[in-house]
Image 1 (tube, rainbow, N blue to C red):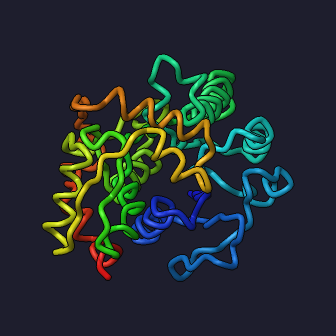
Image 2: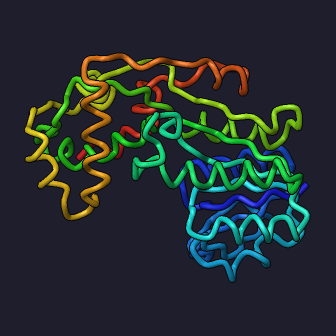
Length: 283
């Protein structure tokens, strides 16, 4: 079996490559800039920019399974080339946001939903099997607070009491490894969460305890926050985030045991994630 791992520079993709390599499974690391990759010894690299369909034929040649990031721009071309290459299974890194009633109109969810639908249609037509991995809030989202914490500034948040289910990227990678290597798991959708529902103030308190750094919160208005991130978060995405945080303000999220079901161990806690990334928050 040969597995193409798209987005191999990402935290999930790179962790998945390590797992495949450790299991002796042939993998191909794909990225828009393959020269920047540093995969384990023996793993080939290939250019695969999901926004450039001219890359697809070479990237998919001889591939049995794909770990796919959710880029909808040329998903129909990717599906066609995967079918032509004889790909048997595509595992999509989707998002729990696709389960929201307004997913098709939500800019965060819409791209994942479009790819899910394209893969599901191809699977129904017998092209290949498709599996959807739907994590909730990535624990790595907390890295956006690192600059403030390093400089001993309060983290500005419009909804400090908004809950999330932070999941360790290693758990997502291990779940992907399970569905890629165990045929009985193919063809389903898996909602992944971390083991705890934590609001932002609780996450910051854990970071402070684990790292030994002050990690405090400053409540700001949604408008102030939106203006502060205008340089790097598009307005539509900022509005979607504000809407999500508002809807979960003071409301714990529903958790699943899917990580444990797929991997055989409980999902890693946010404290474990903080310990693994503590240096990112220390001066």
